[in-house]
Image (cartoon, rainbow, N blue to C red):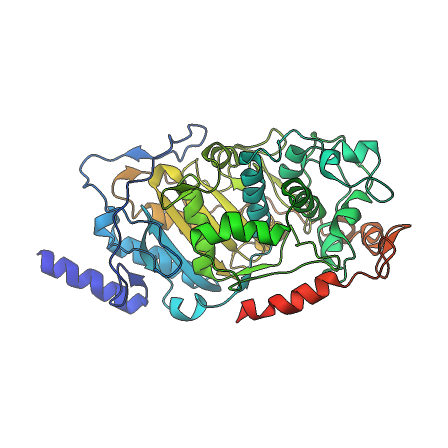
Length: 474
């Protein structure tokens, strides 16, 4: 009977084209201590409940730069193979380039064309914001920065560097997208590649809300934070990332590309290009509470903090989206829709994620020691424009995690049923996301900085740095 069941599962995997368990070319996993399981939150109906009859799962180590991920069979991770195949197959059909499912650091399933899609450098888009958050946490751990620091403490002085009110914005407010500065998500990004100085562009925007009181998804806010971190650590942000984050987890210098503005500042809101396995390393770092091969890379206290929802948005923590709270307010494209639900009702309440437009996703579920990484181009099936565009909690994740959770054999996750559809919001006013006033402020930032000149020079440093870094895309 076991042989028959095994053949049925193998047949299903072959028909679906989904890779399940270790491949023939994968090195055996190294032994590592199991990651500590965080206590599941109790605010969502989908908090997992332990099942009775289970086996001790296999645990894989975090790999060095030259090693592949450790692998395991679904059975070794208390996962139903047929249901796992079904879940990954479903997600793979949603315009996905890559899908990787890990449990206890072990890779258990991938996209059928992972060998192709997994080699492509993808723009992480807004998942870059979460990387900036991780770098902020590292700077905090080093004692170079505090979350409630006013950013003026780390900014230059003089024209273009903000009045007293702008300099009083805190690091925490930039992390929670509550700076209060005017935003327009497409206008802020429309000058990509020509921006003279991202931080000065952010500081040129007027206040539309009292800082700390209102969630507004911004591009220039995280860009300003990236510059603040750079100033606080007295090191170029990309060099700091390589030394303190990428290098320690095996992402080698010259193997990626991070776009800079013309003054040489890394874009803090998007334009970090990584391969799916590199993104998976960042996700597994977070799943291991900031530790990698015995070294604490990101402080564990900061890792725990990133998924705590802010009072202004139940779905947002410190530049990470979270499943812990509700209601959920999305990005302002075409409108900032607020949904009276958790981000992913079909996933455990403690799930949190890095999320970039088009579905560049790294999802961590501490209570299940599970990590999912996927890249691609949208994929939600919904009539609501914000959900369809991925700017609000989307249908694709609801559907996928409902299928994936059904494969978990050692815990029960509440099934909320099929995606029911969200209220359709037809507010597509271009001023929500393409405000000409914001675009003008980016182009003519202040009397000392514009698209041509900035601080008495024609900035070209970043252009040269971008050219030198382009081989990282190969």
